[in-house]
Length: 192
Image 1 (cartoon, rainbow, N blue to C red):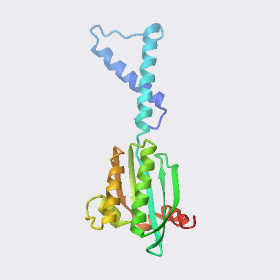
Image 2 (cartoon, one colour):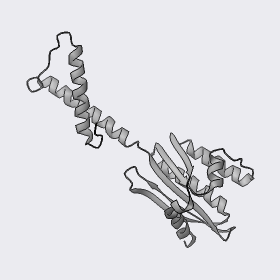
Image 3 (cartoon, rainbow, N blue to C red):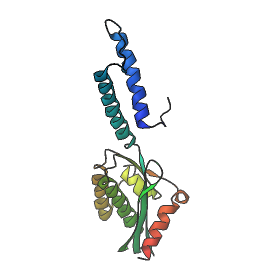
Image 4 (cartoon, helix red, strand yellow):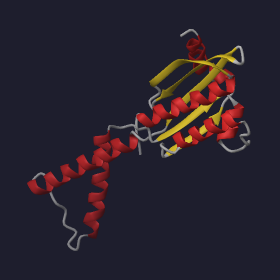
């Protein structure tokens, strides 16, 4: 079945299949002629509208992508964060470049992850995969590595709290060369 068709067309196809199956369960196996039976035709259109809404809702729950980065120059130094959220259709939904003042690279990475999680939650995103190039942050968030530093523990808690606001949220490491756009946005934040 081709799922790249309009939601209303897909809904009609689904209703037709259900209609055919229902007619086989009918005691008399009577086929109803929708052209002649106005009430049945109206009911059919109501079902099409309801199923169309469900299809549109389900397609809006496809997975979004998020990319984040943080930097401090020198380290420690001026911190900046950058990143963006990409909609399922590959368009950029949101991007940011923010100067945070003085701190370390790791704090900036955590702050950037917290920021993107909060922005996703504010936009009502239900499913998101967020990628970053900091192995330390990703492994700590995914509980592969322990968090020992008190400041990092506090930031880690904020990340976990923010992730809990999104029903399906994953955080994944990616190589720095695949995170160039988020890196550029973080560097732009240095100049703000």
